[in-house]
Length: 77
Image (cartoon, rainbow, N blue to C red):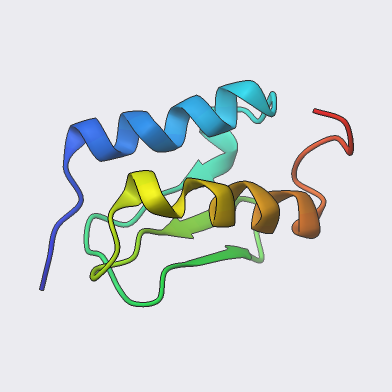
């Protein structure tokens, strides 16, 4: 099982920062799982699971789109 590394978490943070999403509103599990996912938790935080077989860098556009679809980011953020 692959583990997410700090540089990859920082890549995710760049998307969160650009979309003005608080880092405290997000949970990022340390283990990666395919195909990667973004979901709203019962406590209103967003869980971001990085993909295992795709680089986080290549997945960032998918992440951004999923955050927008969830309504976690402003429409023009």
